[in-house]
Amino acid sequence: MEGLQPGFDPERARQFKHWTAGGRGFSFSPGAAGARTRGGGAGSFSDILNEMFGGFGARGHGVPGADLEYPLRIGLLDAIRGTEAAITIAQPGPCPVCSGAGHAGGRRCARCEGSGTVEERVRLTVKIPPGVDTGSRVRVAGKGGRGEFGGPPGDLYIAVTVSPHPLLERRGRDLYLDVPITVGEAVRGATITVPTPDGKVQLKIPAGSQSGNRLRLRGRGVADPKTRARGDLFVRLLVQVPTDGAERVREAVDALERAYRGDPRRNLRF
Ligand SMILES: [Zn+2]
Image (tube, rainbow, N blue to C red; front, side, top):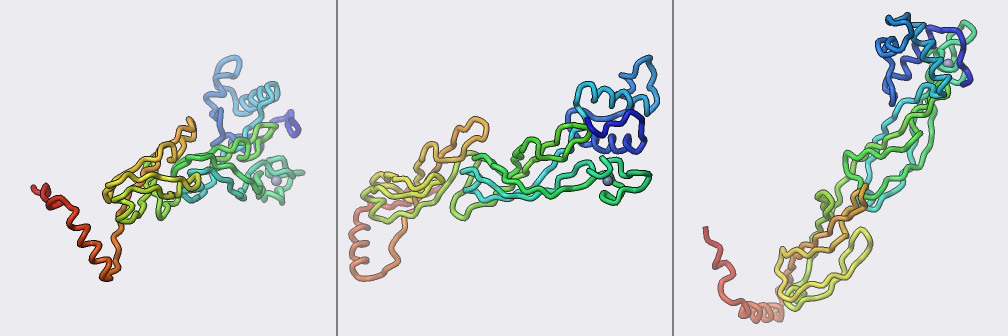
């Protein structure tokens, strides 16, 4: 509780109000504080602050620092896997020269130019847990503004925006991936290699798979940041036909045509 002076200083009171505004846990309002003044009545501003300062001193609370928010954009894979980000924040706190008063020795403080507040540039590596989405706020405890009169620091909140991925589509906890396969793989069935956020996996394609069929890879989706439960990865098979018009390809296609049983559009009626 260094810097806590016994006398009442109106400038300090201004600072006090400044630092409680936007802080967490409690807020300063003369009415609320007045209610706690002994003997009834609202009491003077200095009575209120003296009591409150005394109260903080006794309980060792001080004035907590402000919460900060830092916007961070990450890619979808980093959001799925979790990542670390090196960031530099401007951390506000009471001026170390004037202890937040804005003046020292009867003069305006040169360091903070009378504001009582200075910002420190702080480099941090923050952990982003797996499963965050656009709009997620990741709390970094104690990395907000510095407290005053021995008060605790505020918290830092990382406001996450997730960039879309060119191949992977996210819908909530599930992921969707289009996977091209050959006509032969579709007809005969095959085991193919598919990329997932956890690395490559082997995926068995049933014989007779149609273009547009979906296969589910359970638990290869996005984790819920709280429960850690993971969604699924849905693979959509897209049958690619050869674009080669060579004679042997045309012969093979002729043979393939004879394998269709009837018109594939026979049920396509409104
Ligand atoms: Zn200062």
